[in-house]
Image (cartoon, rainbow, N blue to C red; front, side):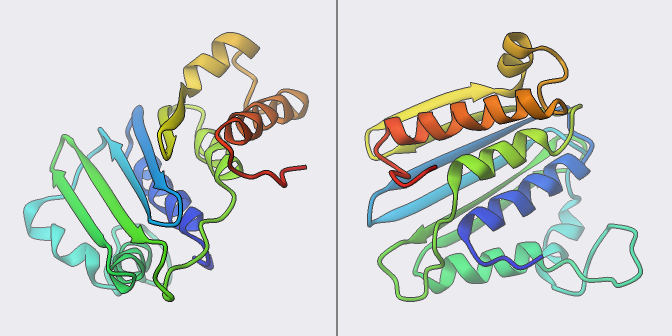
Length: 187
């Protein structure tokens, strides 16, 4: 996966949360136009032992079962955020969950583009039908919040698998972003 935008990092960290076995997760995005972009992902999954917490920032460390043993997501996120003068944090308690957060300074020449926030939120809530996501999005002083369970209540349990309902969910997310004055060119 190419992590070309900040939104790509959000999806990568959200996938880690899903892989942790969590049933609930929270994504918070706070953006100050032309200043900073902050996000955090909190899960209640298996967590990371204190012994392994340092290792997760090693690009050659992974707990996932795969042929090539690389876990580049966290180290690349840390590098990308800190390259802008921002910061990266990871906190975890084994058996209780993990919080990953990053802040990017948007004015830095080294800052990646933000990317498509509504599409990213859509991808996050459709990563796994068993995870209930709570999402908060703030842009300057305005914002919106929702949970994947709210969409299920409104559109039915198949809202993340039925193409017609999925399009409705994406349209709602795009309209919410436009209402904040973001993504004026969403089509």
